[in-house]
Image (cartoon, rainbow, N blue to C red; front, top):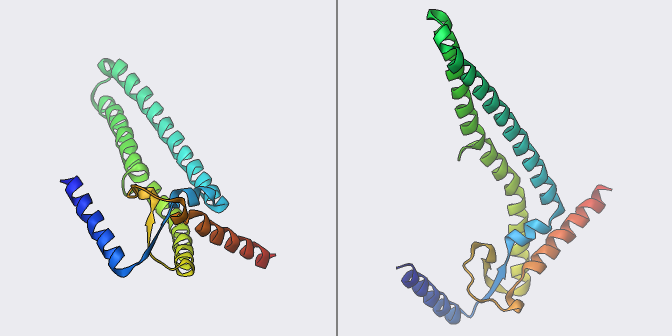
Length: 179
């Protein structure tokens, strides 16, 4: 079924392209991001924050394991309020670990939000550079090679380096104007 949909899409794409005689270009946004020094710096800061949070979580996990083990070993000696208090400590720590994991590493957690905040300015810059490059080169359509939708590509239709040149020249101009 996917093959049929892909074939229909490809057929309509070719038919539409030939009717309107649009030029098509392709860029690799993942490659572009990897070549931007500002993105690498921001990604390094994000990864550093992730490492810090992972270390905190490992520390909590270690503390939990120690308290749980101690509670299990001393359980037979504890009575009444002592037993309930120690059991509550262990359960609260376990709940804290789950909450922290969800808040930081969950699908809507802090890391997802930080990553989205990191990506947005770079996506906007890339989008603006793609628009500029496509107007300059008369392209009617630009595909992203990163999304794995490109089956075949001739090098002359790969505009990744032109977009990257626009971005890097723009950041050079910004640096000069700040000085």
